[in-house]
Amino acid sequence: MAQAIANADFLRVRGSYSCYATASPSAAWARPTRKKPKLKPLDHDSDNLIEINDLKYSRGPRVIFEGLNLTIKRGEITALMGPSGTGKTTLLRLITRQLIPQMGTIKVGGVDISTLNTGELYQMRQRFGMLFQNGALLTDISVFENVAFPLREHTKLTNRLIRHVVLTKLHAVGLRGAADMMPAELSGGMARRVALARAMVMDPEILIYDEPFVGLDPISMGVIVRLVRRMNDALGITSILVSHDVEEISTVADRSFLISDGKVAASGSPDELRVEQSDLVRQFMHGMADGPVAFHFDAPGYEEQLLGRDVD
Amino acid sequence: MNKLVRDILDTVIEFVRTFGAFQLFFVRLLRHTPGILFGRFGLVVKQVFNSGALSLVIIMVSGLFVGGVLGLQGYSNLARFNAEDAVGVFAAFGLVKELGPVITALLFAGRAGTSLASEIGLMKATDQLSAMEMMAVNPVQRVLVPRFLGGVIAMPFLAAIFSVIGLFGTHLVAVELLSVDAGAFWQQMQLTVDLEDITEGIFKSVVFGVAASLIAVWEGYNAIPTAEGVGRATTRTVVITAIAVLVFDFMITALML
Image 1 (tube, chains in turn blue, orange):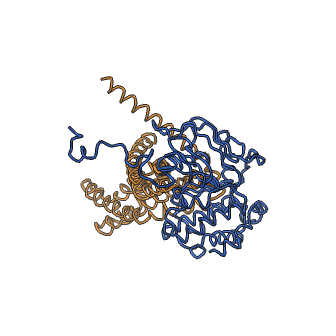
Image 2 (image 1 turned 45 degrees about the vertical axis):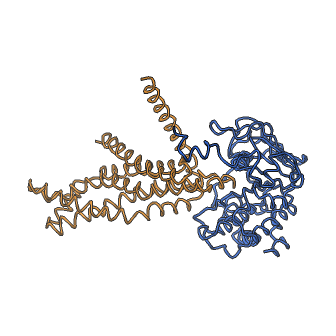
């Protein structure tokens, strides 16, 4: 596995799929001919790839974000951290417009994603790769077909080339041998690694990882951490990472944002956050029970409740 | 009193809103139908197999016994008027025009409809539909439309098979067991049942197929993404489909009389 990362063979097929647009005559009837909308050109000059300004998002009466401002730099690995329930996954869904904010703007490459129509949005999403928390593999097709899925949907590559690309990506995550298995036969960690292979199979410009390290054994975690770093640097992509794993984040992220109470509470490199003096940052980075973030959900007094006095 | 009025109003508004959303959902499915039918028919074939071929056993066994019951009831009642030879006609009308489409639709809702709703609901709960969205693949087009079309195509065939097996069951009971004359059994049926009767049955089964498949994919797609939510969606699929099929059956029968 380590050797696969070292020779980085899987990185070499990047950005070359469009030249196979008419490769297979048999594939011509396999898809309805659709006129694809032209995507608004992205601003490639700016260092800021994603800009979030004054974001407000509520779910029912509960305010998730209120005046959130955040900038993600091109080519960096950005970590989004924060206590459970602060809306980190929600923020990822807002960035990819799976959710729509009540107020504020989210710009990707200078394009306000709220202005995109459905066709343009799907074109934009081809620039994203996303690793879901639980993998979200399609359960009725094999591991190989899961990774091949975006290629079959969006390209007309020959089966031989698809096989080459898919096996290369699976090799990168150490699961080439599991190509014929069904998702139900995989462990949680294996499913996440397959999902990672699928997320990077189209060689996206932006890779989003939602809790990529959960459920991985130490060996797989080390390999995945190095893979994230190596892919980001070798392909020049931008990575966004949601994780609670402070140690792993420290080794891989260029910049971190700590989100709390609907806003960015602190930002900077992991080392900067580690020496930050604010109570919230110290509590989170050092895993302390006492601090601004309460471990216990609001409840009546422990003793009163046990003795039944709270119902009187 | 005010609260009662407000509750009734809220219920009516919610019903109108849901019904509107349901119609828009149907239009969305229809909008993507030509692309799937003519561009990716393989996806539909797979779903015809899942909804149709995998429902064959329950349909055939049920058809056999329903036909058998028709044979017994028909014989015992018609024998009072010395008209037991007409048991074939009695069964044919019952099966082709009513029981075939209706019972097939009810069994379809129980076997294939629940399967569709729970599969789609679970895909939603496990983020598979979101993952498709993120891969720039429209889940309505890729997942829902093939399943909807699969059900619509499978239903008339299932209803036809139900009727044929049902008639076989009637024949077994009436002719082989109760000694009704085989010639009279089949001849009266041929003379009396005409193309219009069969067309009515086919029309009903197509309408029921659209209703059952549409309700199943709607419930699955709008299921609350939890185990409880998917369970509720599955139950609602059977209940709503059963009511819809019986209401449509009455309306179509009234129109075609």
